[in-house]
Image (cartoon, rainbow, N blue to C red; front, side, top):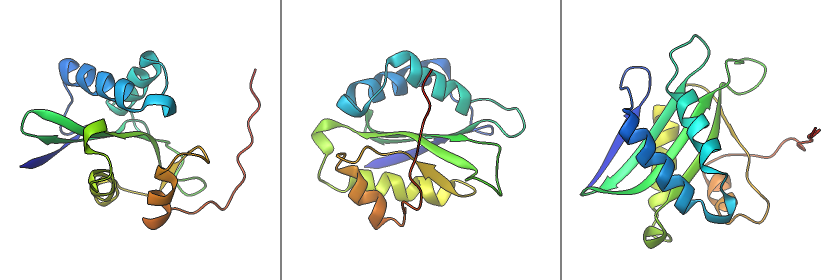
Length: 146
């Protein structure tokens, strides 16, 4: 049986669970991931209680096995950019192609207040899932790296 969990300012994530989610994302994001330290920063930001900061961490477990995780950070900038940015989503390698990612995304969308933005690499197969769920690409993102 699958069980969803939400961690936010009301349902606080423990240090141990944050580490478990970071390890899971580091392993299962594969080539679309970041260093574990960056993943931990996003999780720590989601756990903040400051006004305009914080976010959500959603997990999906089957038995005691973590099979999916999402990290969403609040931007604190509603009305002129989306209130939230989906930073990470991953499903367990053994669960891919079974609709788990779609279920997890739908759950996150239903339980997250405000608009959601995300960045996805053009060759990431998850791009098609995001489009099916209603995400659009109205802008060209440009960055200045220093």
